[in-house]
Length: 393
Ligand code: SAH
Image (cartoon, rainbow, N blue to C red; front, side, top):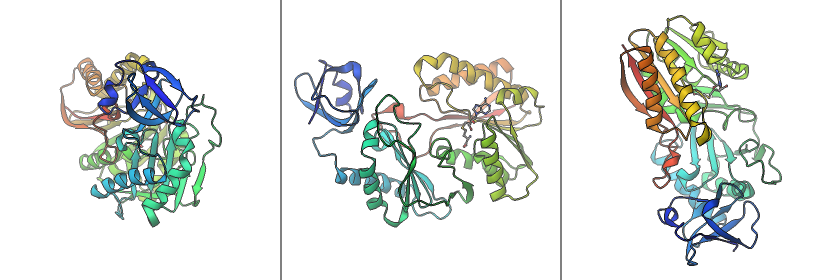
């Protein structure tokens, strides 16, 4: 086995089961591993600490196991079985009203670099590391074994998530197993088209399921603005919740087409809904003050630490515009999915926006990602989705 030796004292975080080895912690690499190969990690005193996927970059090893066990098909089967059993415990497997859930959430399932979302009988698999890319066929075989008839098709979608510097082969999107044109999935009894071929993430934002269900409960009789709507998830929950009108906005006209299709799938001919392909900031500037339920679910404003300050300013500016215009007695659902923005940072940004608008604001709910996007207790960075539901007097 090729090996990585840490600098003295750099094993502390691994001893606390943190699953990453940063390149700066490494004293030397032995055996010239290829990107994506499995390597062993040793302390400077030559004590084994972990085994994981090697990669050139700031995160040099993504830990798969803290014991010296083979990383083979049986390993993947064991890890995927644990992931499946947890989703069963959550009531997400075999539920005819909701056949959409995340089966594997990277570090949260002790499988760093791997995402698997389930849409009906199709699994969409995404590799975020060279190692998971190299092991994709073995993982796909293990997935078939663990899921049995529940998974008939496996679509591999890693073109945009793999490290572009690694010289990897066969990174094109495509089916690893099966191949079905069927692309309608179900969430809490609502249906939607999943564009796993070209759509963002694995085709749908599975992580907002619980928060969309909460929004439904507040929607009756309200004038709803769903800003950054993408496939329109929040909009069709609002329609089912009895909203008086729902306006969906996204700068991407493809997203607006998807939203219209999904609304038509669930509420054909419903005239309460209108969709606008427009920039969020422009729309918020020109809109009147008719809305009393606003959703702000923007893309990650900061993908890296160095962008944090600008991102926080962005969140403040965006939320301030909503506070200025939302009706008295209005409810604001506001989110951040940037991993580098902490819960406290986000809350401060929204606090500043509220103060700028001089509105009286109360926090009703503090939201996060759902249970099928678990946070590994040893990897707090895995908690990325933050949301506040606010009552604006
Ligand atoms: N709320 C969605 C997910 C939002 S993803 C859901 O529940 O599924 C973020 C969306 O913001 C993307 O669809 C992207 O096209 C859109 N977007 C990015 N920048 C934008 C801007 N400046 N104005 C409006 N929409 C924008």
